[in-house]
Length: 78
Image 1 (spheres, rainbow, N blue to C red):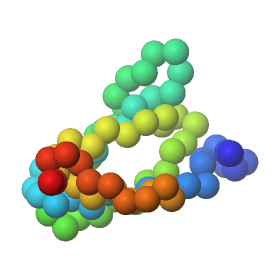
Image 2 (image 1 turned 90 degrees about the vertical axis):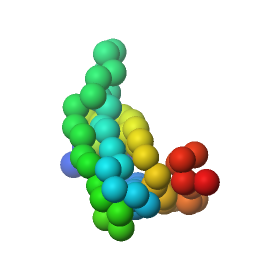
Image 3 (image 1 turned 30 degrees about the horizontal axis):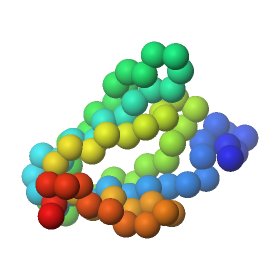
Image 4 (image 1 turned 45 degrees about the horizontal axis):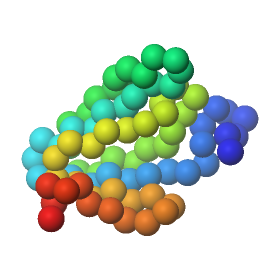
């Protein structure tokens, strides 16, 4: 459910387990495109939430991801 400010109430956390983890935001709409990218180094944490413009996030590299649905690791982190 979206709040009046256009943001979802759910936050998610990405913690880099290696240098150079890429976090890429993808747009909403009929054409899904990359619209934002961040690079995290070991131990850095990014806290984010989905918005009216961001429908998905792609994580590349060793990282731990926490959501309200649980904690997961990218396959590279195993």
